[in-house]
Image 1 (cartoon, rainbow, N blue to C red):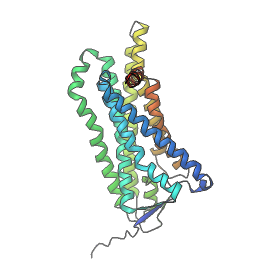
Image 2 (cartoon, one colour):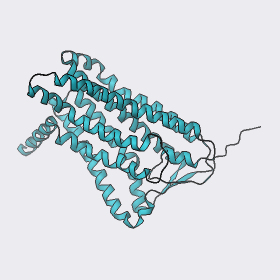
Image 3 (cartoon, rainbow, N blue to C red):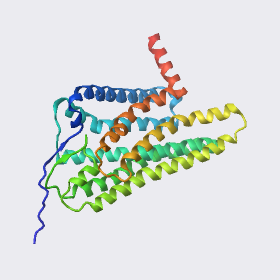
Image 4 (cartoon, helix red, strand yellow):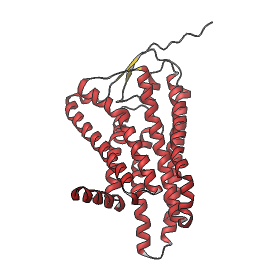
Length: 307
């Protein structure tokens, strides 16, 4: 007997924030301003790192990769959300839906792993400063590639397992983009294996990196407290503070959404904070709390004024 493909759904309908329809214009303006601020802020940081020779170090190389990921991350779903809010374009094809899912999961996990790599970079710089540049000069590119490769593999498994489920209706997704848990809930077939894969990916992609980062920073704090001079302690902590704040915001909000996903009604609002609000804060954290970036920005402005 031939196997019949029972998937008859050819498109999905994103409900987004339909319960806030009366505020959709205000919400559109708010999301658009956030998106423009996030993209422009990260572009500025990237250009500062590329143009200022004093920022050509492993730490800022990783930051430049991170800001690229941030731009791709928000661009995966915010343009579609804006289309839904202003034009009511809440329909998305089956293929486009799972392409969006793949990109969102891949880039999100890549950021998790890259933040771990950045914690390792700070750990090595503080605990083994004499060998830091020798080690990082050989390992920097490989460490930057690791998050991309691992996240693409993980995202491919999750996307294929979810797309392989049977979708025979309904096709309304209670979210503002194609998300794993809402899609799995719509499936007509048993989604237990796919849901378990999502939970495992949440542990591996979130809890493990977060635990490793905490471990690195505990060791960093122990080493810094052993430094005798207050100036030395302050300098060591200042190189870690921006990364620590970004990591804390990123992982705490992400774990709230993705650990034990249950497709609750308010999950999309929590996801909005994690996917839209947090990324726009990162450029300000890296500029306002980072003297090197601020000095590079002031230097660049000074050159422009002289011209």
